[in-house]
Amino acid sequence: PEESRAFVKETLREGGYADSLARILSVLKWIRKEGLKLFILPIIEIVCAFVLSYYQCSIDISGWLNFDSILTAISMALLWYVESTLAPAFDELQTNPIAVIQRFKDFPPSAKPQ
Image (cartoon, rainbow, N blue to C red; front, top):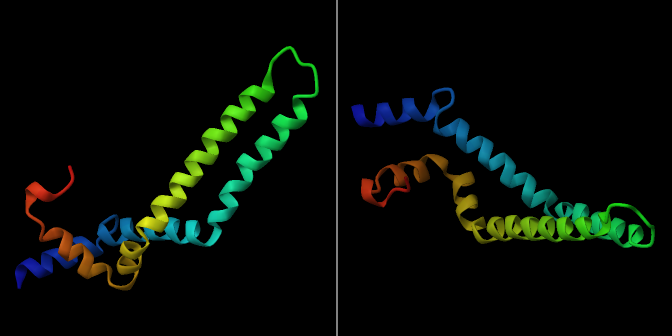
């Protein structure tokens, strides 16, 4: 039918649903593969803050590094949690993206996020 043709055309056009989905899925694949490496930066910051706390500076950089490492660790943990929580949805998107997009399109307008 004509509606299906329009949907497929919109999905496959450059910058359409398929391109957006491919970008999102590539980031999510990277997070799954390299997720634990995200915690290296806050660990390095904590070590630097510990080492720098023994040196006298006119600026208290160790306090700033401690605070920043905590924020970075929380951000990385949140990112990892979201990815692991939504893993079943991501798996479904990877195996059958057209069906998921069609299912999303079939939601009533009031149920779709704005």
